[in-house]
Length: 265
Ligand SMILES: Nc1ncnc2c1ncn2[C@@H]1O[C@H](COP(=O)(O)OP(=O)(O)OP(=O)(O)O)[C@@H](O)[C@H]1O
Image (cartoon, rainbow, N blue to C red; front, side):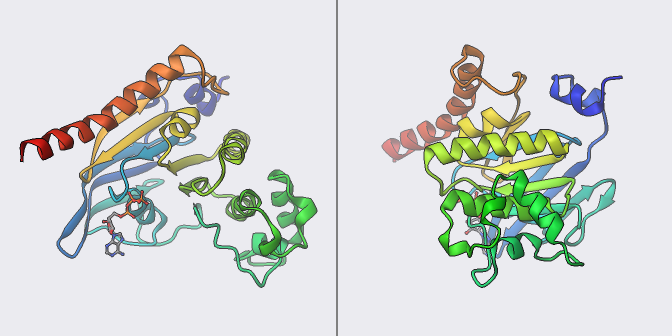
């Protein structure tokens, strides 16, 4: 019988498959007088790959931090696996743009950080999944940017999370390394059957990797675009460019409005 995951990946309507795995209900977040997130309602299903896009400062990272349990909502609820999230959850891991490796620990030790027992074997396995086992005994300082992010990915995966949060993890990488890392992330997501939530500035990256792309503007979700394209995605296909254009146009609309407002003022 077809698994839930393969149904999701073959493009069946998610609501027909399973109830939400992660749910945000009327989530608001303010910092002092500044309302950053305003009534965010979002359901993410097990096994989905969802990207969040939006202009700088729109609250993408804040949203991820709330889900990671690193911050609390001003009001509303985050529900994970049918329970209200109130703190860091062992099944949820986050990976940041700056891999946050400890410079005084080797690559292997960085991967095993936070594991309860001695876990060299697991750390080696995680490193091999990101094709970096040969660098196990190196210091982070001698790694390239892409390699550091691989270590950081291995460190998130060793904990076997069911939900992986990715906060612009490829933002500082050059274009080719970025493409390689996108492929790696997609392959690991498929292999490990995890749910992934990616924050990115790169809309092409979002379309290439995601089942859904969510656009945030002025603290609200203004677009929730499903991407029904087979994987791996062909970025030069008409269908790919059409959906990419649609999202880009929606993002640009806001800018056009702003420019015309400035002219009128
Ligand atoms: N701890 C905090 N204290 C006060 N203001 C904060 C805090 N964290 C975030 N903010 C503010 O909330 C807004 C949203 O920030 P956030 O980092 O979520 O944006 P973002 O969409 O991820 O931006 P970028 O794409 O540039 O990373 C910004 O105006 C930021 O200054």
